[in-house]
Image (cartoon, rainbow, N blue to C red; front, top):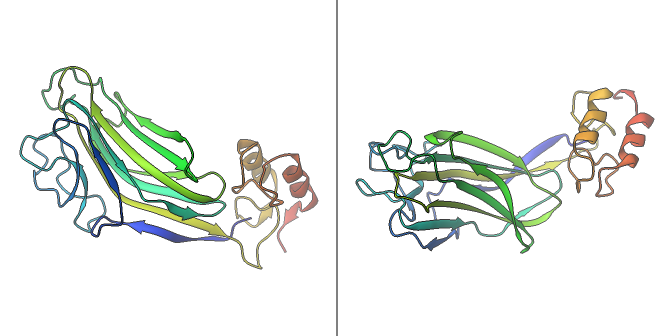
Length: 234
């Protein structure tokens, strides 16, 4: 079982760490700035973590995403087994901003492992979590190696007021030390039913907290390892 975690990548956007922006929208393309529009058009009035800067979809007065999509892509970030990707996001697609065609656009978060195909991590909208406000998100990564994350915001139908922002992107790697207890997937000091439930929930995945025997796959071998270690940790 993992006994702790450490941050291996951390970007509060106050320096340029190599993100790429594809400017394909007519207005409202991603910019790394200190927010200055005050939230008067459903945009974020401040960044998420209080450090000052973040990425926003246009920072000018009455500027929002129109006539296409804007894509923000991270540099390659190294990670190990059991890693967690965290970020803060803001998204508003017009329901409170008097724009035409509200609640008819989406915000996409995708990841690419080791230079492979893009995989959707989450889709925001058209209604849930789409009225602005900062949301802190944490997702488990699969396997180990390198990963890129991209954030896509667009206004593809009738023009509406679409605003988005991203801040505080980080990766935490999990680790084990010599005091770890084999089979204790949830770290509560007891090998029991909850640990079996974690294995079942992660069945078939590559690595992670459910990979008790460390062979890279969560399967029946991990259940047997839990049964073998059943009871209180030494």
